[in-house]
Image (tube, rainbow, N blue to C red; front, side, top):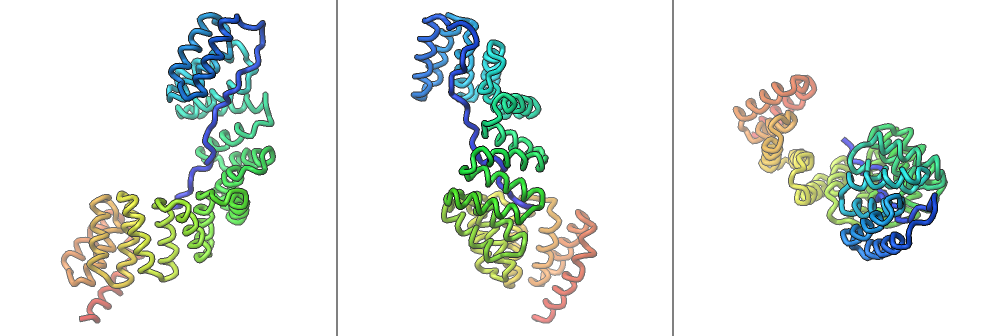
Length: 354
């Protein structure tokens, strides 16, 4: 299973602009309170800013800008439902405010109300079709919904509007990868890296693309570059280990799997694959321990029972081996046909070692 980073790497950024008024100017006291609120908000004090926005709204209950910015303050505090109410109020008084629609869409997205978020992004784009942010975040939702063709279309539009943003190419690369257009995805990752040589995720995903197409040495280079930028990436260690294992570099793979397990102790895939690498270099005790750990984490993992059974054949623990194989085939009957030749071969080799 591919572990591709989520498409929209771009962090959602709210619009902090004060919407243009659509009616007579608000009362002076409301403007002064709004100005004070904005200063506090920009100083990183959203709670204090809310009190000033409250004062502005009390002075002028139809002051759209005060609702808009109070919504931003609630958003920054993680109070997305309150933010939604304020953006809604701002839109009641200023229905064509693209910034309020964009910000409300962000709040809906945070609350996983994706259909409503899409409606707002659609409306924001209609009002302001030159805002790349809306295309990126709408594309992110499409990507998460596996509507990859629509995601690619939105990321392409974001690239047209902002061709120097590396993350736009990175996002489209992920969409193309998901569509199976691997070479096109690699080109987008190339472009992302050329624009931002520190974009760790682009190296990582390009490494996966190279590995999937058999270019294992290139994949290893990309995973290594990703690790230079982020030495705590368990996934990069894991996939570099897999590439090394495919090249027969089993001891080097074991080192990488071990590091992946240290960084993410709950990663059963790294533990299983390290066990397989130990099996390849005939360290059967180590292999059996890894497969036992996988079984502890995932009692229904039939593969772990099979490979522990094979390890125990080499350890001459025949009864334990038979119990493991029997359990594996109970869990997944279809395994037996494909793995029986491997099991028979292990028995022959184990007898030959006696």
